[in-house]
Image 1 (cartoon, rainbow, N blue to C red):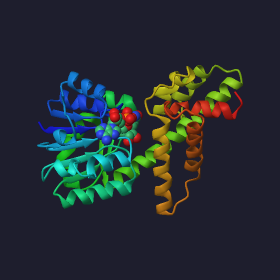
Image 2: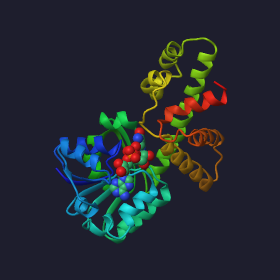
Image 3: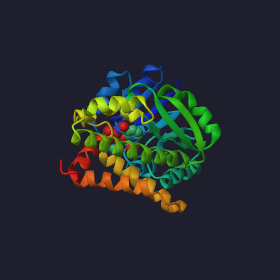
Image 4: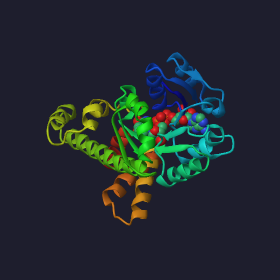
Length: 291
Ligand code: NAD
């Protein structure tokens, strides 16, 4: 069993840290939010007073933070993870951030003898709570093999996808697909309802056919009921569409549908829905349809 420092105990980090504690790891967590620390203690972990306290003596450090500025602050800034983790520590940044920052963190870690993987996840809050995440890791294969038993506690699909930054590229691809599916399910609901067909019944049929997807499985009932409590906030999906489009520009490829989905997500933010679940793309399609 390992000593694990876990920083970022939000929607995803709280259940992930709890699973690690339940599996017998010694988990010391830190978050700016005191309520999140109380949940970790209730789940059998220990609350750290600050980043150094969470990280000192840890064999593995996991960060699960909103975006690259928070990762830079927690990991790279003076007094952060790289200043306090011992040589040989393995840092798995499981946040979804731009690949350039993951590569920068890996280089800075290597300078201090700290092994780094970018290991973003997919599966949403339900995947975190059920320990059924998909984990896509970028970095050295040997480092991945070393930390895989820890990842296996959190996920059911755990794959080394390439060098540093590759995990984030796979995650960007994941997010453009997920965003597109949400947009199209929203359009299906609007069409069904506007045509006088029961949307729940219609989506039940779709879920059983070629249009079936995890989004339809997990979210069709809550979407039809207009239940948009996050889950995954539109603000975070907006960040992820930006990562995908920046990666496309850097690679010199055209992703026209991703561009359209990014604009729908941006519209959701502009309409004031940034803190709602990304299934609230339905509200965007409804407003575009004057409904
Ligand atoms: P969240 O906002 O619920 O949690 C982030 C946590 O980080 C918060 O508790 C916040 O207090 C903490 N934090 C921020 N700055 C900090 C700092 N400087 N020091 C310590 N703690 C700090 O976000 P989330 O939904 O858990 O997402 C986390 C990451 O996982 C994001 O990159 C997101 O894109 C990704 N992700 C989320 C989901 C999802 O369904 N929510 C799914 C897959 C991936």
